[in-house]
Image (cartoon, rainbow, N blue to C red):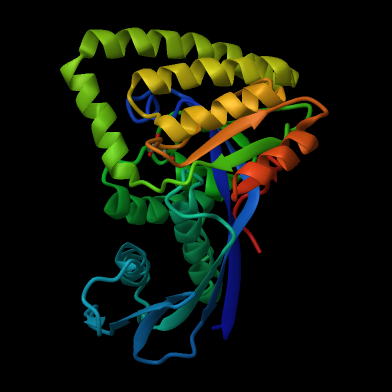
Amino acid sequence: MKESATASAPGKVILFGEHFVVSGFPAIVTAIDKRVKIRLTNSVENRFVIVSGQVCSAWSLNGQPVGAKHSPFQALYDMVNAVCRDHGIKCVGRAEIDSEIMGAAGLGSSAAVAVALVKAFSDLHGLELTIDKIIQYAMKAETEFHGRPSGIDPTIAAVGGTIIYHGPGKYMHLATPANPKVLIVFSGKKRKTSKMVNHVQQLARDKPRLFGELTKIYSIIYREAFSAIQKYDVEKIGKLFTMNHLLMRALGLSNESVEKIIEVLAGLGVYGSKLTGAGGGGCVIAVAGENIERIAGEMSKIYPHVWLSQTGCRGVGE
Ligand code: MEV
């Protein structure tokens, strides 16, 4: 066995179809150039330790937390423990998380951590887990963490690029002539994905006709987006962002600060913008023409967290 292994996985932005994907519709998602890195060592003999910045949690060999009972990493530990059980490995080691992805902001940070951790674990122990197996384990952590995830986040963190996602194990890489840059603006409000998913699923149960109409409009937006991305028609992608955002607003996912960001972006000349991820806060994404760098600069003067990101980036790996 090796002494140590490292792995990294990307964050993501959902271009089209968050929430609709939970209800079985296809969504389009892309991997961004912000990554989580995991360094895993077998330096610890009788515990499994997870460290991120100032936060450190440990579990004894029988799976009991050492010290504080409630760890923010419990789902990650349970995932690693499942890998150990399935492969007859003693669950010991130390994992250090080093993340460039803001958490609870719709950028897929928890899934990227889970995917990178399984990959590092697989490499350390020579398990040669396939990408699909890595996604399955990461999905376990995501389900414990978020309740009812569609699986889109661990899938894009593992496979990278830009994909159509249509449920666990059902995805397809989108052939694109180029990958547009996206502007990402954090609204200042973090939120829990599970809460937002429950909100939309409840609305779908309470107002089935309204939800049904929204899904019909979404299906049209999705088809147009599929072809706009394949043609690298960035202006059209922007217009479709705005339409998708209106659906998210109708689902009660927007708020005042998100709408303000969208208004400022429109004033600066983007092609269009939308919430990305679960909503209720989180981040807004936008595309624009050649002036996108200037718009990013202007936005940074107003908002503290603005990123101009590459899309279609590589999935889990070194
Ligand atoms: C999460 O990034 C996006 C949601 O659609 C939830 C999911 O698909 O798991 C809101």
